[in-house]
Image (cartoon, rainbow, N blue to C red; front, side, top):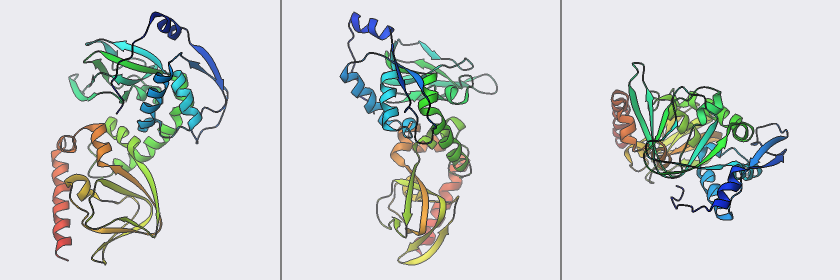
Length: 313
């Protein structure tokens, strides 16, 4: 998470920030983008501020598809903003033109349900971001965000976001959301949270290698994208996994050692979700999954049955 250290700004720096310089670059896209010249704002910052922003965005899954030159441009384009407790930073239904990155403080995210009642979604703190959905999909704000404490934030304008970040994030979210929505473990998690989970998925390639090993600590969940994997208990084949299947959930949910060894059969492509990343994004796993208690119990029953079956082998 990002540091919550407060910055002190003199009047000269405040005035400098109010008058952005312009920077032109043809190398602003992530690796999947075509390149074209765009004008990116360049707000004055101290070296310490630049380093702090770079540290924060490198930890944000949202920016994981942006190349190094794109990250440099993002650091220049972020603009500083403060907020007081009770300030409405974004309001559901409004047009959105900025993404917010939290330097320090806490915000509350809520959304109106079908009956018009305000529902609590989550709290966000230092190192978290919000407001990206309206920019990515050119849609109204999907939620309301209110400052709970004094806030130090960095904002990114729509133009910079679109040229540096947007398409890489959209492709990743759409690809992985379709996978997550089919899994019993996540199918009832609300779309907003699934989008954030999609940001945290990391592609891993294995070729005739061990992916997880029986008896070792388990903290991540794997999903098969391409190829086939096989599960072994005491060197005995007990199960095969094909695209769309997942494994490692015993360690992921129950925090227990790996119940079996899983090996890639030939070359395989997986996505991995770390338990720690899940918790950092959505909070304690039990709290999130218990929101859909029926589905959660179904998964737990399947895990207990599978564990019992494996132990009997």
